[in-house]
Picture 1 (cartoon, rainbow over the protein chains, first blue to last red):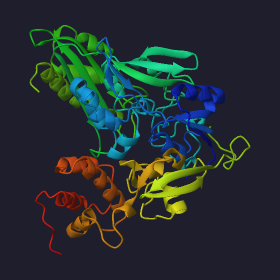
Picture 2 (picture 1 turned 180 degrees about the vertical axis):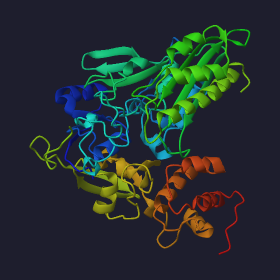
Picture 3 (picture 1 turned 135 degrees about the horizontal axis):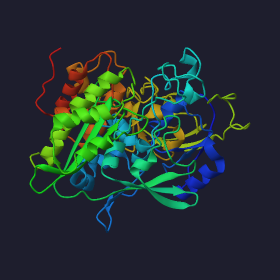
Picture 4 (picture 1 turned 30 degrees about the vertical axis):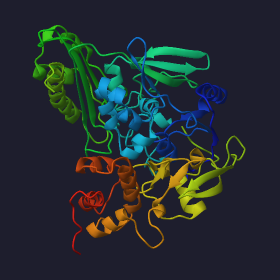
Length: 331
Length: 175
């Protein structure tokens, strides 16, 4: 049982849900799959007084829009996303990323929108305050970062560990956000503030309604790698996504994007390295060194900065090689 | 800080209890719960079916897996009120009285159960897998059971049990 009392509502549409969230202010939370929210409520990391459940709303199946982009309902369960033929054929990278999320049960329960809006994580923060041996940390309103006492800048070093967000950023996805004043559209990358205390730019009564993924160009290649400790049922140690487009000669790279997740308070991109990859024949080893030096991974869950940097260097190189081979049609 | 001073009320009032109708193992049940009660507690404490086990309480170990409308679901992180009107199957649904079903027999044949705490979750995950895919490969089984932890580490015999029950050439062990 969750150890404190709260109220629960189950509106019939997302519009009613935003109205309810708007009425209650910041003290209400949206409940979709609950696989992230419920454990957090058990340890009282988040303590909403009202849960607005969207389980009564049936998500629409992924579909192709007139302009060729694919619309995915944010309430789509991750297992449905993995099984959807349209996604498997058109966006295999998204299906693979959804397939790596936690366990079968979590994929059946969890939704795509919930995966994007998951709370940032930290070994110290994600435990009951009674078990914490000293005072609360920054994110709980304290005045010290106990896992990293050197972090004295009043910022939280909890990391954002979504497996799917870096893929959607790499694919230039757009989010349709429903608020009390109607819908607005933002780029996927603008969802994140990069601040561990308040990782999302969403307002209190705003809900991600749908995700639009534009069609991929010709000679497009992708690579996805998630390092985990145990293989299955694990948050990523470092997640690497690379997408690129090759020119007609099959060697020169037109443009490339590299996105890292689970190594910062939001997804990270080595933009200077990406610029250097434009219209160039790529040397994966050099690019991996440049990219791993450019970003600054946050230590998390017992992995130190040096380990993460080396991990990123090694797997950026391998992922880039597989992305190039994918664009050349070899795999 | 997220400090809660009064855990028993919301804004000075008790939260509203709800009467839920749900079908558990084919039987219609009506239970009265507060929103904060989890499906696991409703099944174990209100209905009295204690086959479903309470392991980590944070959605990691999979011992609490039940089938909600045929889908394997972690009942320790599902609110009971979310399951209103749903069709729930627990491990008690598998056996017919004293007679175990084929999957349970296969677990016995292969020694797929040691201390037995993870077994209800394993059985329900395996049931969901076999209903979706009657001839799963070893990789399919590993993927389907990745959310069920067994601290006796008897994973191989559990996978063998599922291969045996799906008739894929694994013979019962001679015990």
